[in-house]
Image (cartoon, rainbow, N blue to C red; front, side, top):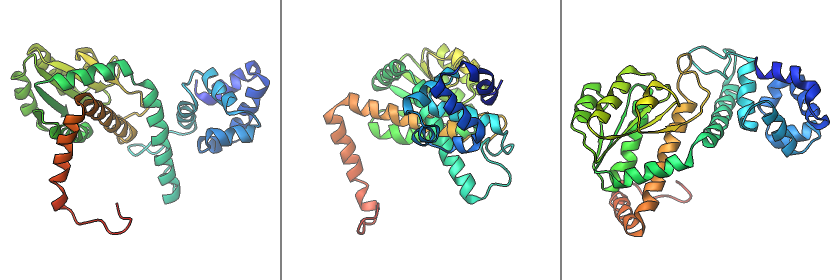
Length: 285
């Protein structure tokens, strides 16, 4: 049962204020997808907390999550492109849809992150003798971004795109190693094997992947991100952005944990780059 069917079926059980929200959405669901919570509340003549209560009554985690479910109810999108984009969309439409769906997905992902696990993984990263970042396909670029962030932290880091190099690297792991694996689905067989090899050699394996996936089951710690994106059918978009954001979270935690002296070292690294860039002109970034 999709979200529109749920609204219709449970309409009589809603409060008077919630029914106002339901009626506005059922009258023009496409408009509701592109509305802010403030706009939808105004259109329904209710408060923003009422809209949030309405969304949670439908077993969603809040307004951003509700909008994602609503979008999924309306259309299957363009296969192999994006769920939210139709074949006849013009530049304005598909630009707005990609930005809006990505921002909504990031909010859902943020709510799904376990802060305690983030804290534990930051602990492990700051204590690691070596950190390896591995991913395949679209996740390889995410792993490479992690390398770009962490190599300046003065800790040995490893990144290989080649699966055989990944396997050999994990064969040389020990108890001081952290191996971080990236996969949205968690169903890539080769990466699951990498996790098994790393664990067999006493490394701590951290997966940024889907909960309860084959990869997650082989990891020591799992940072799962709930991003409703079917990458079997569509290009990885929002899921990749969510993974990149989580890398920024871990890099920030690492920097704060190391203290002021460590940040002075980061400043020196930044200073060495000054000569490689043209000076800013006016308000240029």
